[in-house]
Amino acid sequence: MAYDEKLAGRIRRALGPSDEIEERKMFGGVAFLRGGRMFVGIAGDELMVRVGPERYEESLGKPHVRPMDFTGRPMKGYVFVAPAGRRTDASLRARVTLGARFVATLPVAKPRRQRTQRPKRGR
Image: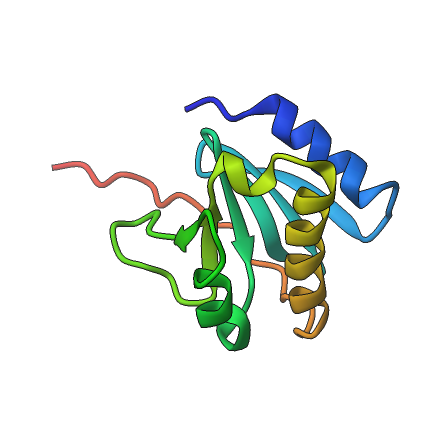
């Protein structure tokens, strides 16, 4: 699945230069992480924002926002923002900032252990 490269560029501009932000290809799209924690991402043309559990219901009450249901089940603390909700640079910056501020309150994620492939057993 391709993702919206223009939107990714707008997010990069909203974030500005920072050594704290990591960009990683994930779920067929791209995610932006701080301290190893995703705070905003793009899957197709969907903007995902990690708002946290405290701001979740409030965020859902805003226009053009719906629960993030990437797996078919809503993920509490994460929302999708429709294109109309991120039309202006100011509205996109507000969404990105909300996600970045939330993950700044979390501890840095522990590096994940690399999976090793087990040798296949013969029959």
